Length: 136
Image (cartoon, rainbow, N blue to C red; front, side):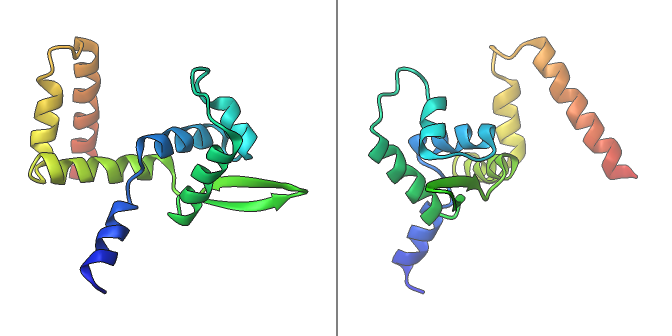
């Protein structure tokens, strides 16, 4: 395998902004047609049917969704779960921006002055729960 095809494969592991918007709507719907997904987009989003159909086809080529016929309609279904994509995105962010050091990523998050005490408490509870689970 040459370097170009590896780069292309790696690139397709993450979604572009518009692809993520479509996947977010599809994750919420569970499955849907082009029109179903378009109906979930923000009102300010003025997108032609053909453009929306193209985006969903690209998502299928990237193996993020699959499709099947229901009558005359093509129905798209997510292949990748939202939490799996969140993990993939965070790992990519950690590698690219935080030298693959998750503690640096978390430190940046908890040092954000806009983070509320409530949110910090929730993070602490999650860490405490994980530590308890790992010691059993």
